[in-house]
Image (spheres, helix red, strand yellow):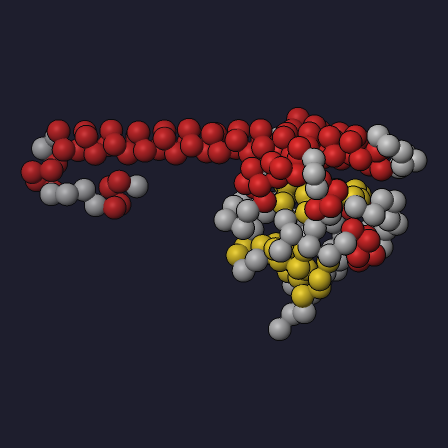
Length: 219
């Protein structure tokens, strides 16, 4: 059975990715700057948001496959397991990763509403697929967080970092809603055409001659 690596701190995650830790509670990783990776599974004690530009293996989220393609956002929350099956081949990922410890948002407005971001849930095993414009917005958010992390820590640091993390998550929520509204409209259109097909069938003589429509006819 494949070993599960436990990641409870930002430093542990950074060490696994071979990058420096600039802040103990939050980190932005540019995947273009890390070594190639292959099969792994990780139990996460921290939050993570991954922007993937290149599919680097089949992603698993808990025990379920994740609907993951090129140019998508993937979300992981504390207590969850995720991993990548690259079929034993080392692959070079591309994109960004944001990880942050629950202590970063403890006692903040974001800390109180973090559970409202349902895309962190195990039940949502579908990644967020981005348009080019949406991706640009998300990358800008990653860059703003990184810029603040690189500043000398002062009394404003936590507020600004948390505010930018919350901004990122709010954009993700907007884009998630857009994705499902679009899909809902498509499904409604398909259902409408199916209902019309059945209506036309039963209003014609076909029902009397052929009986109930077959699956092939409905397709």
